[in-house]
Length: 519
Image (cartoon, rainbow, N blue to C red; front, side, top):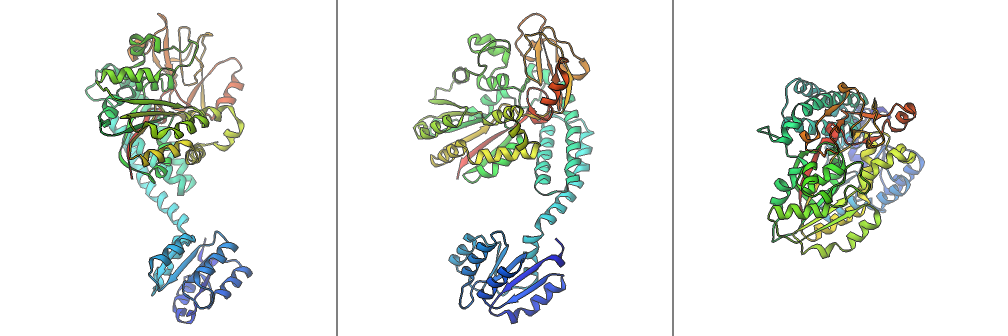
């Protein structure tokens, strides 16, 4: 918005004394209409359109606050800047409660007036320009770092930096900068895939001196030390929560909690609930679960729910860690179950640990694949994040967290894996026992291009179950997905641009772990 387009209404019973300020604004290109009473201000608003109003709080006749309410009734979104000699807190609170845009104390100088206008009328443009300019500088730095061999800690920090700019540019940035960031994220993902291919097997086999915290070790190393016999801790596992989705709900959570620690860990392969979440609660890799607790593990081709025994796996891990504590486990898969947990939340205060698994985000990603209306509501990453935020603000989980705060309990938030926006199909052929996941396949009769996948020919190398002598696992990279040659075009059209998990990408593998204390 250029200054020549901006029309200002200025209402003050001493308007003649403000002539120098008005001339100052007019010299800056603003158009200013001066009035000397509340009645005149209301009439002016009814007669013509303004971009902002300067409003004296203390005028004879109709008070500034009354005028404020009447203007808001006529033009609810009108930026109103209150100017007053009165520094009483109650006046300020009334004005703020009436949704003023700014509050200035007399005597005001011209630069204060100009700054307030820019803040309220041009902030979006100014923020966009500044954000784009700052990212341009960091773009070069990120690009240089991608040319260096990075360790796991550097990769996590780099991904946090990419997520930060993704959100910043979404909220106020040049669309061309958003496109550049998207290309840079693609480049980062390509490099990250190679990093995982080079190091993953060594990490899980314990052959590396340094390795990231991973899903199967995080409970022992990060959750267990937070448990205290004198206090209550809630562990909230939000299925399928990406790092960027955590960042958009963080500000809402911070209304009730302080963030004591914010870390990132690595999901395991496959980045799928059946594997990653079972590993988290068991404190074991999938093949170890199958070996030690055969009745609690189902393979891909087995019938039945694959995450039905998390509570039992958790119990075994707590015993193994020597944690003789009272605990509860609740899984929420729909709104009614969320309400049920909410209604009984205070009965859990006696436990040292209460685990709540919330499945909504995972259901959202699947619904987005299957329901046209959800596809339209979340047709790209910013919309997907926005839908997550909207859900969270109005969900039973939000209410549950408020109750956790009122109980004075500590809260840990984490997830099992993230999800990635898939775009490019890869052909694969398998028999009828091959699993249906689009990001990984396991079986004995798989046909594929070895260069296009991360192949684990011997599942035991990656601590994955081996259902027969010739079974293997293959994983897609970055934003690719598996498609069968039969009915290929229909299949590709249906699944392209959906959010999937199970493979290798920054979005699926680098996941949040957050410790919160109540405010």
